[in-house]
Length: 123
Image 1: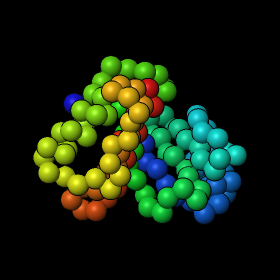
Image 2: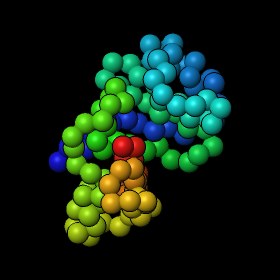
Image 3: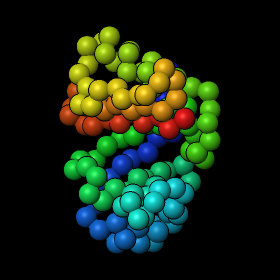
Image 4: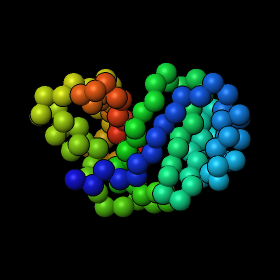
């Protein structure tokens, strides 16, 4: 199963201060919108999403059908991933939200240790 791009999504108190901290470590902004209080930073293969005022907990994020360069790739659709987890008996924090039978969609689930995992397909 190809899950796509992986990043860590962090809730932050001061997005400007957080950006400065990670830029000091060599991270560069690759996407996002600072006016909406979210950015994605990259340093090599490491990606970090910084989100101010959007959620309260750390999340692991997978972007199905999307690579680390923000390009569409062949991979497992978010609907297939959700169906597999649902069939295995896992409960979702946020159920699959998708407007069509293909394209963008997302859902959130907790792993067995209570860590939040977001599957967010943009393409």
